[in-house]
Image (cartoon, rainbow, N blue to C red; front, side, top):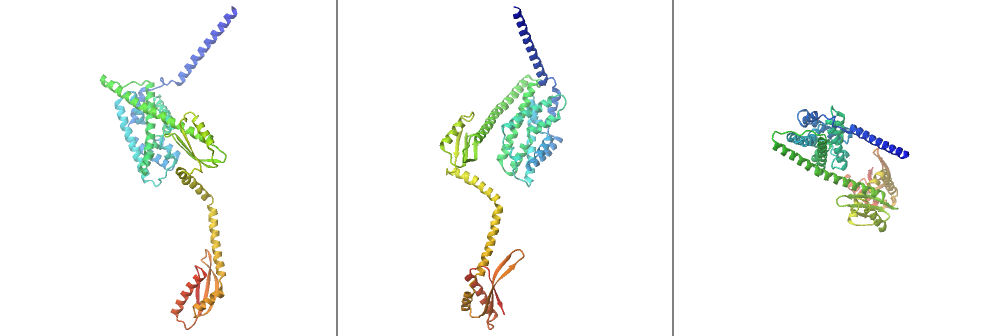
Length: 473
């Protein structure tokens, strides 16, 4: 009985210690993560409303920061783009939209939407004018990266928006956090890319960049809405109870209209990112066969098709069937179709892919690597041509030529031949030269006519394109 009593006491003590530890842990976590007590609601509301307006200083700061960001994107300088985002006042209207919906403030919502439109138009117009007059129109990695949203952009917008509104609600300023959020959410580069797309007439770039900006804006506003609701900001009171109810319904409807498409978009982007990641991993880890090499591969999330192009040793169909089976056994890739194109497959699509892209790329690479070799061969060819000309010139059947010349031109009294070396101080040429002595009774005009005929005849007879015929006294 005594042992049982001791055992019960130990168990009760252990249970009490466990509960006490759990209470301490909960108290620690609440103190660590709770932000209600340190929230300055009045100052936050005043700050948010003040930052919404785009007039005077804010407008000029926005214009200058857009110019700086456009220059950074134009020269692909990440440091310059970050510097532009540090001074940009883009966050105000976006935070104002989310905050006004959370507190049912229709007037603030209207001001936020109007100033958001002004901000977008002013930013795009500034970037458009810069890229229109800029002599550099090439696509840079910084510009291309802002033409289509990914799941990473959505996550950055969500957590950046959360950090921003939490920083704004805290008592006292947290400027460094706000600046860090301005960098993370990256609202400026997409707007600059919209201006770039319009300036070069690329509507796909402009539309993709505007889409990216819209995604970032929606999720920043949504994050602001959720945090504002969580912290219990008081709703705006209206004297007319019917107006208050209508305003609350309108705010709730806007929140729902924003949240539902945002959730759907998030899920779709996440699925596409998972698809791209898994297909790349599959190709890199599974598509391997001795003697064959993957030249390129394309994956299409919409059609669920992976095209793989191989060169080298043909891969047996049994191996391809095994690859397809492995692909369909991977979660999220069960319905994906694998198309393997090999070098021996002469379909028009294969010819277009391998001939126009792969073969051209290989030839260009070989040309670049062997350019010096080609130049050396050209120089050797020129040298051999000169030597061949010299050989032809030095091997002239002089005796036979003189007999034929005497038959054709009876006024010739003497004929000699020699190879003259001629230089223009950049190269040396060997010119076959014939010296002719004519009958003194021949007039000058007749002599010149005979000389021309003789020169033409010698060039045809000796198959030379360069020859010199001179008259000697």
